[in-house]
Image 1 (cartoon, rainbow, N blue to C red):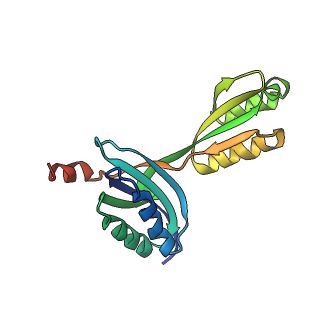
Image 2 (cartoon, rainbow, N blue to C red):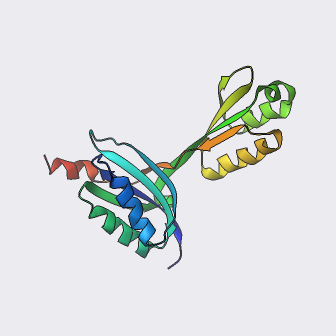
Length: 173
């Protein structure tokens, strides 16, 4: 079996220590987490972890099984990139003088479909949503001009197919 990128979705109660136990599952198997995002889900009082890993399908099945054994976990799913719609967000902080002195900066912003979030006397901030490769490409274009700060979020995703989490929760009511 070959390594592939998988997105694991974990629906859980929001309890202290769960993130530590979940990351321990990956640590024991020497599998690196490429991206991690935790937020509220579409279900009230239920959190959703989005974990991205590069491994074999056999390993991801084992990991999902181990995650589901955690008491607070309601259900875990895994999907390939082809089965999900996903993106990341990034913020770039750049010196304000460049916005006016370097016309190429304005072209880069426009061509990359980025958004200027704020402009101050000393800096401006650009927001970009998209695939990791799009954000990395924008980073490489800004790099020669000097990036004051850069941050990228973890992957956020939704599956193309319906996940039966809502109907599963109805059985607990």
